[in-house]
Length: 109
Length: 119
Image (cartoon, rainbow over all chains, first blue to last red; front, side, top):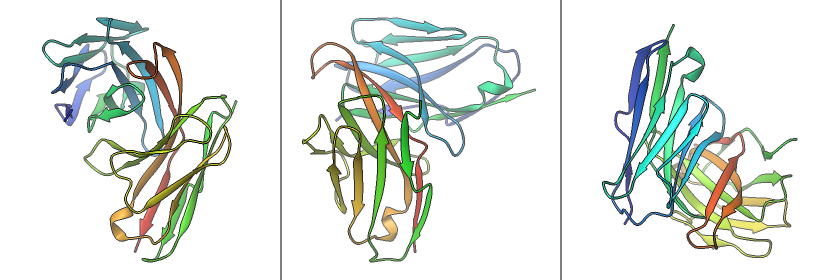
């Protein structure tokens, strides 16, 4: 059974730092991996989707990589800003997603 | 463009009461989903609908029923609410990015959630 883990559960860094969020999964035979952002009291917003044939995707200051052989994905955030504070979740699958519990990120001004 | 809308935003029920959570999307997506999110856990799929007229169980379907009323609307019903159903419920719809049904890429769009408390 596929399991998705995100460590750490919470992370606090000063503004301006580059940072990496981690996502690991147990079954390397995944179809796709997605990163989402969740703001308090709100729904989730899709950030990046990496298809199984891809190794990375980029959007602005965000870069997500996928290494299926090691069962890992990373979300790199460059030049972090207070507005990046949110919970970041990763999920693997196709039409059915298996979710990690998320990493709560706090960017200190 | 409203995207995915959910009603109500908040609800308090007593054990044994019933209610229906409503969800609608205006993006012409075929697939729709109901999730629950509990503290410290990832989202768990309750039911999904691949297309109008079809519904399937997800990971945690017990105690819930769904109706795909039309392409736009997908409702979730709790027939007899229990305290274990206290959670935040999210509705989502998805568009296929590429590939066939199994193994394809589906980008999901979420509603704002319904916070349900069962006492």
